[in-house]
Image 1 (cartoon, one colour):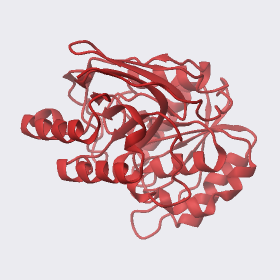
Image 2 (cartoon, one colour):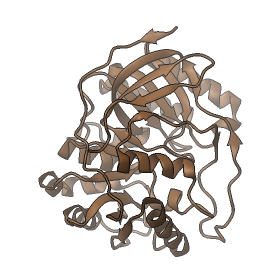
Image 3 (cartoon, one colour):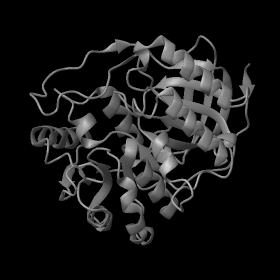
Image 4 (tube, helix red, strand yellow):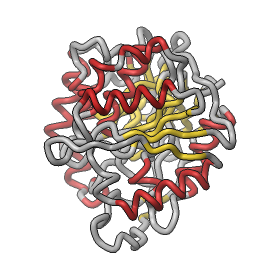
Amino acid sequence: MTGDRPGGAAGSTPPPRLRPGAVVGVAATSAWAAGRFPERTRRAVDALERELGCTVRLAPEGRYAGSIAGTGRERARALIELFADPEVEAVFTTIGGNNSNDLLEHLDPLADLPPKILVGYSDNTALLLGYQALTGATVFYGPALLPQFGEWPRPFAETTGPLRDTLMTGAGGAWPLPGWWTEPGGDWAGADREARPRHTGGPYVLRPGRGEGVLFGGNVPTLGVLAGTRWLRPPDGPTVLCLEGTADGASVPAFQRSLTQLRQLGIAERATAVLVGRTPGSAHDPERDAAFHRILLDAFPGDVALVTDLPFGHTDPILTVPLGARASVVAEAGRAPVVRVLDAPVR
């Protein structure tokens, strides 16, 4: 069935754009990784400076309980210092993990500081949405330092180009959708100098339709972590829902559980379109894909457009998605979908 869902009210407030030559802060908000992979960190810092024409300021990274980059209070303090520094115009994360929600109860000072660009994905869904709840600012579901900028021999142009367009020129417009992808990961502890195999393929229109609303979402298990807290404040009106997961979080039973929770929270019912990021390993298992498609079709009404295998989240290359900006979706069977950002993501 082809649906046509109406659009809604304006979304969040765009932060100031990133200027050439500015300082970009990078904080370890969850997992301990920069100290664990020093060669990749050096390569990633060099690449981030080169690609954005900026100076990187890497916040001190602690270590707590083996694999966490310091206590929640310590990680929050490092993040607040970057936001309080007038030279820093954007803040990136080093990587995801499992514990960015530890920071949230310590981040109230950010509400009194000027809004800045904040970029991350995966577990940093909690940080992004928490910061948005505190400030009302647009946040950016996009590349992290080590996974994307540490890519050998250099970051993918299909990742860095849209990032620059979004953060530096304030370009909205249609998402560029590359016709290839590669699995995330690699042996960072080894030589870490191998190009990953590329696979042909693009987004898949699972259910045709049209929709308009405020971009909202992120990593589905992490959205569940925020349920019932003051840091989960979804749009009041129509929503273009963006969902993705790791291999474990995107297994059919786990994703079904997350979809049920989104419905019970009242978030799923606001969706005019649902965009699902490509999940690791999914393209190699047709039986899993069929089951995954079934739960998506059953989870949303027949007039909600559904598009899967989009380039955001745990895949490469990845887009930079301005959560809080309005977007429109046109999904037609047998044709590439068109996702168009209607608001300027930065000012």
